[in-house]
Amino acid sequence: MTAVESGSKVLRMKESDAQKLLAMRCHIGTRNQSSAMKKYIYGRTAEGSHIIDLHMMWEKLILAARVIAAVENPKDVCVCSSRLYGTRAIYKFSQHVGTSFHGGRFIPG
Image (cartoon, rainbow, N blue to C red; front, top):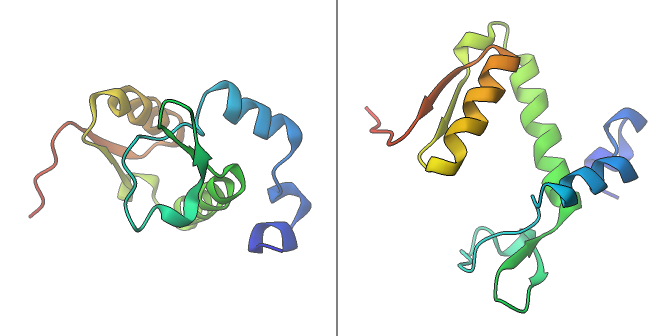
């Protein structure tokens, strides 16, 4: 039993949550697999793309939501995406949650 499953019923993934994730194709990964991502891979498609385990994805989403909710001022959270297809998503997320965001290339320091 995972940490989310042993916790509150509200945090458990419902059938409707799984259907929404599948409809948005959140479970389809890339063809490349790093050693850090190996434990999150459920399988592969015929084309070679990796399929991500929805339950493990849900656990990480709940963890991220708890971390963001624990921060007193949402503007102290910065959401970043260096990929073009992630820029609109982080912009919309930042609008809804009230965080700051940075789309495009991120140069630390």
